[in-house]
Image (cartoon, rainbow, N blue to C red; front, side, top):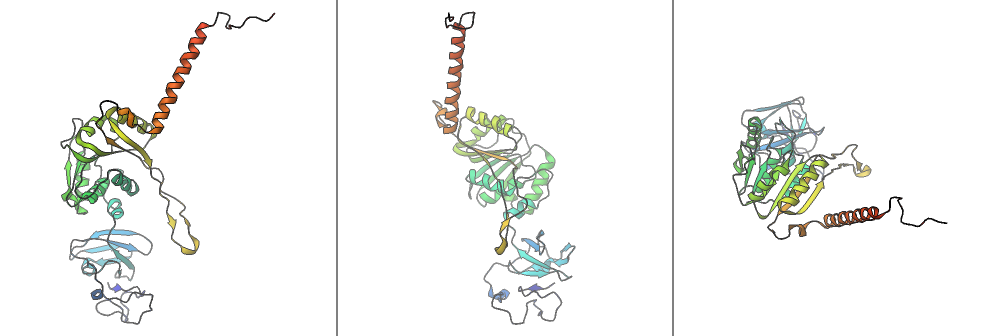
Length: 342
């Protein structure tokens, strides 16, 4: 395998030097820098790297001396991927090109072993935003699953923060542990293989997220675990679940409630023919966020304006129905209080 400087030369051609860089003159539009000229961090042993094919397939691998990456496009030696800057094109032994990149958070979340449905990156980004996570934050997650969301949470709070993730099923915990270890994020996560029916083992945390079928059952536990004014989020896929959750949040002392659905539509990156992709990532879950408050006198004052208007209309409708019932009870048996016409 050799390295290309984007001239399009294939492995094994005479134009490549022993170091793998082209020695032929290049056009001004092509990068001419050598490895020594680029002031960037180079790949090293145990790095997680991404190989992207010309067809758009993405392969995640951790660099280990002596190992090989195999695909239908040929094999790539890990040793020949070491000490290279990201953004270079490398070649398999069959001459097929791969782009060497640092993996993004999306790549880390979606290319894991899974035995459950994982949270989409688009939803995870909104959750991290709504939980206001930063380095040093302490966050509880209930419903680890395969660890997709756990990866995003740990990524956000590292290196000084902590994720406390709860999962009742043993097999899910082991899969999540392996995924977190592969991504290098296990040091920032405490996995708890236990139920939360009796509450959480932590208190005064900055944020808490429930990825459960019936999150409204655990709202009191969540309120106790959060610091006053902390950040809460829950994920459910259907509107009837959202309705149950909203009622529970109002009854448990939460305010600043928000329900969001994230839809993503990609565009075809063709400058002269920009248009949306034929398909899009539509509905996956509803993200409901809220803040725990301490207002025993009148917590209802912090309901949304839309909720207050609805309550006012509801009370008005009840008064109208009561008035109509009262008037109907005053009518004579004939059904009218008007005198008969002569």
